[in-house]
Length: 245
Image (cartoon, rainbow, N blue to C red; front, side):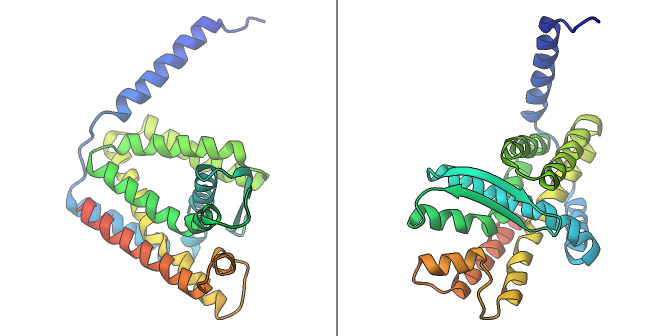
């Protein structure tokens, strides 16, 4: 059996990495406003339709949990693991002080993450970085994969990541740009929906949600935090619309 030459493998990896970096830093032409609008309509349909929403919700959950994890590390907490379940729920576990600004920031990050990532995507797309956006998402999924703690969550990340790599490597610049815009629109339009669902489920009773935990840590009730989440997501959508058009 012949084993691959390490030097050859290193050169191949360097070539691939160089190609990715070159394309990620190259400006790609934006679609016409009409195409951007059509992609927004398609994204809205995916968010509104119950069947497609179930699968879109997985993407939103991944971003939600990534938001918790990112801020947890940012404020100095120790990340223990992330789970994504088949019912589209998720869980991020971290260790650290049970109270204080860091804990509050981590709890807030989940419902704000999809809109925040969508707004970042809009800024990148406005500067012609569609390929860069796709590979930024791949990099985030790779980092998140290290912390995933259940098989279903690993499968979800692998499916999303493989799709992004395939599209960004094999499809034309036009299709890459279209997919990047569609992802941005999906994140932005989907961001408020979990908050609305949480409001419907809550109806004055505790559910153990992020908003309930924030109510225990702050002087403000859970309803206050839900309104904050909703207004922040709508504001992110408005800023992104202005940016994309």
